[in-house]
Image (cartoon, rainbow, N blue to C red; front, side):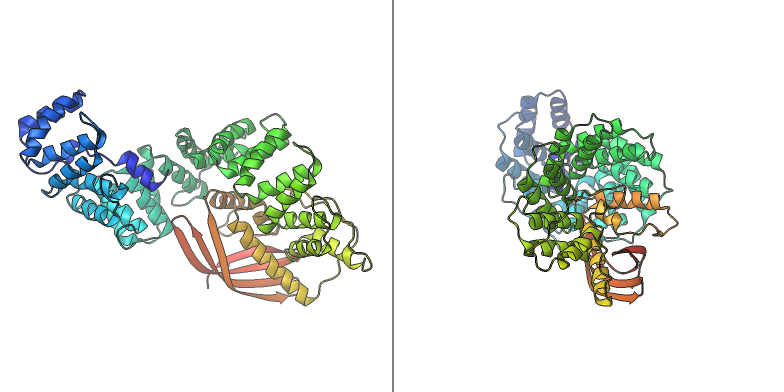
Length: 539
């Protein structure tokens, strides 16, 4: 749900307690009583004379009646007219609702600047709804110059009045460091307050903090609790996360059937990672009956959203006729889509298709192009196939191996017994550079399989985390976001035999987060590829 939808759903009306200005007790009480019993005609009969007499509370109430079609035909233009009359008299409820009308373009031309004006006037009178709304406008730069610090100021005022959405967004600012100093304990404090009020997004964020040990001691059981509460409210991200905990047995007893249940709910809402993992469960027969057609169905949905792992997995299924009739042309199409996103195993597979003329016209140039891209990432089978091509100078192209499956449990099976040529220092440098860029691509594309393959078995995570804890943390931080952008510049690599040091500036962007920092990767040569053995942040 977008911020604008939340505004429409949650913030259109204010309670009578917000009323400011003089109140004529008897008509006001009569109007409230009529509204409470659903007698809207009686409410109109009470409020209209008072509104015509210039009483601000009645003008506000009459505006609500026209906006909602309560006792009169719905008429947003007439609603704006009465809100303006009350707002100009300083009625905070009318000011706040007038801001909503300008924000949504209801009964008046849409104007974020006018929305900001009226939200501010109501916020200055202490109305929590309006304080949150003007904070959101500063947060998003709508109608005002974007200013996270001012957003935080208004969120804090609304949050201290117990307004859950303000507590949520203030906590998020403390997490990202926008407008305030990064403070995970403060983030936890405000998110917990919102979560205790039943806010699903806050509950899910709280689950992440417990899972990662941010602002609170790491506790998978608490993470599962909060993910579960948010999942019960239908939040797809939380449904996926609680499914992943049941899948891995973190904080709960491992249960593939329950994992499948939650994945299915999130997948039904279009959550690509849930579609991918549900497809994998059907491929493996874990928690569900083995069903390649059902696996293909869910992988197709994830692939249609651009998930590279799903595209590659489907390509393999089509190439071997699993879950569908064997179709090399379709396999080639899917391998190509995944290869374009930088997946080495997909680049290798589409390379073999071009070499063998499977699903595409035989094209030695295209075959070599894709094999070189995979080899540049240190993908050993591609290096070996290129060696085969080099040993068949007189042939147009060698016949290469069958497609290789991406595996999560071990290395890709060897496809040729011919040893690769020993690379010179220039090639080694190119391979190390390609390994770094492949790591960046996998991170940015949220391809967790390729991301984790970039790290050596002997990689030592920072912060005294175990490898399993680190992988779980990274899986959550990478896979749990709607989108991620990672870009590097100024890459410099220094070789020292079988090790290398890569330094660069890293630019990371995700929703609500923008960060630029220096980073250093230490890499070690493993066969024909380079793997990360340590990483540190700092210029």
